[in-house]
Image (cartoon, rainbow, N blue to C red; front, side):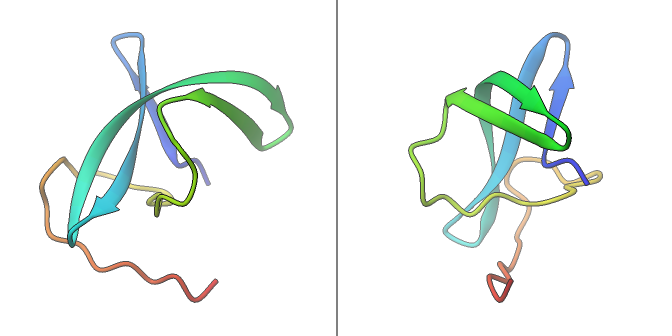
Length: 67
């Protein structure tokens, strides 16, 4: 499962902000197995959408933080 996508050389994740998907540009660093270091673009504490599929910025979403 991958929570970030790369499109046209830009890396981004979708986070949940006020009940909507929010596209956030990031910069990644080290990679080890299925783990990726995010070195820029997230502060910590954001709810990141895992496996966003075809979701786009602004679409209403509901966060399930039970995991």
